[in-house]
Amino acid sequence: MRHYHKSSLLIGTLLATLSALETVFATSFLDPSQSALRGAYNDPLSFQPDLCSMDTARATVEAAKLQLDQIVLLGDSITEYSFDATKKGWGAALQHAYSRRLDVVLRGYSGYNTEWAKHLVRPILSTTRPRLITIFFGANDAAIPSTHLQHVPLTSYISNLQSIVSTIRSHDPAIRVLLITPPPLHEGDWNKRCAATDGRDLDRNVKVTRSYADACKEVGRTEGVPVLDLWEAAFGLGGSYDGDHAQSLLADGLHFNSKGNTLLADSLLKKIAQEWPDMDQAKMKVSVPWYREIDQGNLPASLFMT
Image 1 (tube, one colour):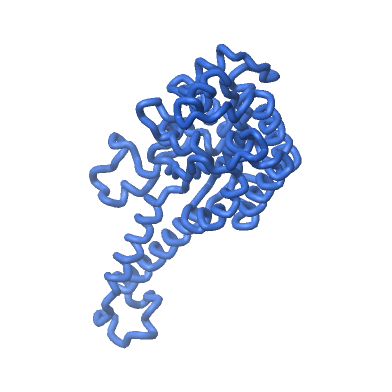
Image 2 (cartoon, one colour):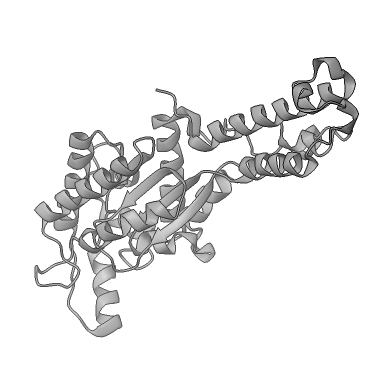
């Protein structure tokens, strides 16, 4: 089914109401015999339209036109850092692509796993207007050993992802959901980061992280949710691990560098367009017209006619 968001319906209703009001006022002045309000006034010339109400209605229409739907990015540090301009953050790239079409809202929490994040979903939903939510967890859930503060057992990771999806769907079934697998890592570089940060031992490895990525894809299959597989995005069909290539995408063995962020942004835009053609940023209408399309003789109305 084609997706129509509530804001579009609201704008249509408001426009229809405003048009009806203007018609009533016009007929009252131009043809008193046809006035829809003639029974309420013995003298049509004494009728004074409520211009304040008309102005309020028009202002409401204009505000609704400029209030954009949102793409909400929910995840851990890889999401929180996604607006880092020094590394060509993938979230910033997404916002640039959807400029004047959709707002991209950052809800990334460094260090978080699904066990903690699942409790934030309802408050996030109540304070945002998502058309799409990306769910990007697993890098911390996959921490080892099992006594690690961030570690979440694989079975719990699966059930937590299912819970997050269920919460979103129960809030509004029209919201699109996209799962993103935890990305590949580079053990050597991450080991150096661990040692340099607080002298701890290596707390993640490729094999375990890959098992969480596979579990994320399985949740997508069982829940009917599209999944962006970052292993295939990085290594091609099948996602066979390549350490040298993984290293070239990562700043510290875990978080993306500029090259990795560009790969993720490009892959995400392609996946969104593939799954939801009406969200293909290249084909979406802008919220207000390009400056060359503005009818200078019909201001401000022509600004709200896209």
